[in-house]
Image 1 (cartoon, rainbow, N blue to C red):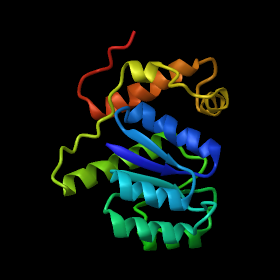
Image 2 (image 1 turned 180 degrees about the vertical axis):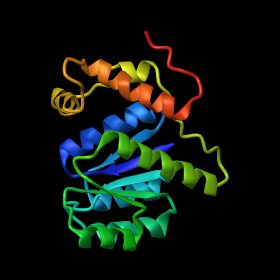
Image 3 (image 1 turned 135 degrees about the horizontal axis):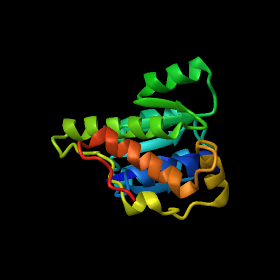
Length: 185
């Protein structure tokens, strides 16, 4: 599976990539730095998912959403640091499947993405498993920058290590999507 990601703000980009690497490690992440590049990548790569910033540097977010939907029926998640209802309504009316404000809430964002992929794949008659797989991926640092780790640290319990936080996320996902208990040591 592939996702095209066009997010202008580096903090949001890091957060989105982190969540996707943890909860969907087989998802190939294709990064675009503008709305026009996002549209081009959607044409060339046929992604299963598009995640885009509503305020891209070169094009209006609504125009990008409409153009993507002319190319593909893949779900579109729109991110914005604006909580303005007008932006939310406009994005959804133009074809966005989900609108999330930044900074994203990691678990909620992951659940939205998995649900969109599950519905999209079911509509295409494909295997609908978007169950997160846990294990080594959740226990690694995933090549994250230190500032990204620091932001994720704000969600950790006092005294909990970063790796412990990732394992806590993985345990939560495993309990949510599996009948077997976690076997972490």
